Image (tube, rainbow, N blue to C red; front, side):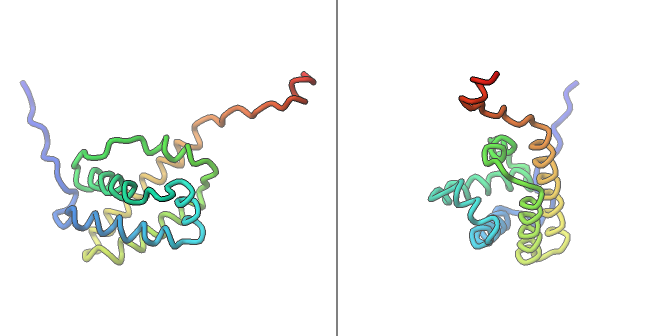
Length: 146
């Protein structure tokens, strides 16, 4: 006997593509101006902000609307950056929380965006700490000595 798939849709009726787009655009506008995170993002993204924003809209649409548009591996993308710390993620969350409070008309909706972001940040931090560090390079002196 087959069971019908559960209804997949927004996690709250007030969440739509327009709200997701406003969250992403506002948040990354703030990221770019942030003295801590701005240089990190600029170093990774460079002049490719338009495709990055489109990808992040797909990501947040998938997270909040179950659209299944995002195809990617966030952990791998963040591991490639290197040097990210819990403080970076906390700053990211502070900006996300402020954005949700400013953009979402309903506090309940803002809380849903924040809750998802907090879970994602915790998961990324855990995944990055659980992965072994790449082996250190040996110098010629090390090879000669041992």
